[in-house]
Image (cartoon, rainbow, N blue to C red):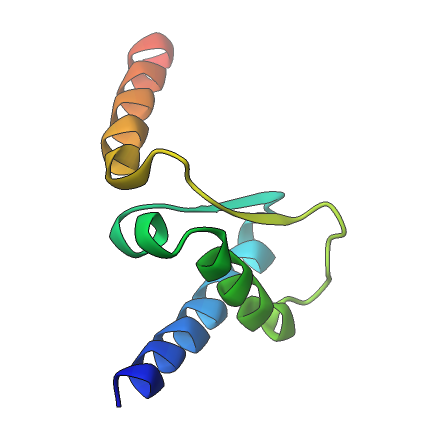
Length: 89
């Protein structure tokens, strides 16, 4: 049952990521936090594969990667965002 639940989560994230790529024309999707820190690039590859059918146009330069910051990724993004706002704002 846990495996089925995990596969459903990967498929659902694939829909969300595919939609985000369509909307934002992304070239890089970084997965971070707990599960990405534990499962690494394998998780990023699985979600990337699940996103493929939901993307309107496949970008050959699009990359799906796992963050190397582990559980600290959220903090790093928050700090970088705060700095960017302070500089522009």
